[in-house]
Image (cartoon, rainbow, N blue to C red):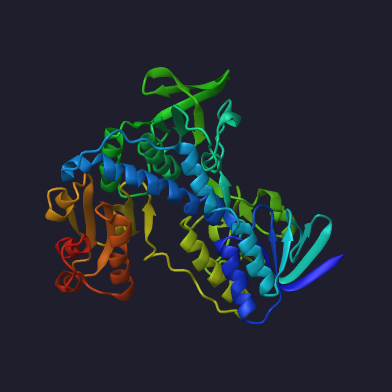
Length: 449
């Protein structure tokens, strides 16, 4: 049997729901297909439940620094199973909530794996679904590495349901997942090692900001090795052995849990893109500036299924809206990523917006670069902050902020002030002469530009 709709959306995460919402607003018929839990990664397996664990780690961090505030504390322990039960309450019921939202708006929801059988058609469990336009918003999945014994690794999904805290955890890969969970696990009482093949962890972020975070992360007891070649992973009863080469040294590391920290890739392999006339290169769908497939004008791509843009849930929603508007209205909109802020939710966090030094110079700028270690500033000392760093890039010709990179010191919140300034064209001088509530972290901003 064939079912037709104006818009067919593959995926019910941020990107898919945003695209569907545009079509519904315009009175179009919409069918959504979901192969996993309705609601997508962020709400169920990503940023939302992860932040519950991060919040617990932040509480432990505050307690650890209580002595700086003349507060005496006794022995503090984290009840890991209870924390996981609390975290699951943020997930329980979410798929049903999304289902109700979809059905109450008169949209059709189909569960199962979609496979393209033509440029405007997919098959799900022997049923055919066609549409005038299709949005691929299937999200991402953990990347894999060609390492012997890789099947022994667990993913961030597993960490979010881990009922027993392991004693020793090894992350293979030094990306966002590894750093964020390392800060949670080390404070919970586990021993943590991060193994990164590249010369640096978080290689896409400003190196000075990352160095500040890495130094502090190591001070917590997390072992971070870069330039590592992982040879194999083997199981020995209830533990694992990770054989690695670090420099000229061959080492064997023992772990109760080995976690895939190698990042994520678009979850499009099962779609049979070729059957839909959709050109891709190793899972990366080729699109134009309007997020439309270069080879199939009926298909748009948004969110983590689009490998070339920041893999962030707000970006997924943003791209989903653009894909929906272009597919339904022919709007011809193009996404602008220049003022998209991002944060890594370690404790404390790091956050960035705009260009770093390398990108600024590659774009033809000769920026004024203002770097500050804020640990001795009154605001930081008030809260006994161990990490407080800021780097701001300013175009000397226009006085506009080109980029900002913050570590600690309320970074994940303060970054939005820089984002707003960049988005609205506010100059560094205007930021500096604003009146801020004092004493706050934001009030230090006028001295950073």
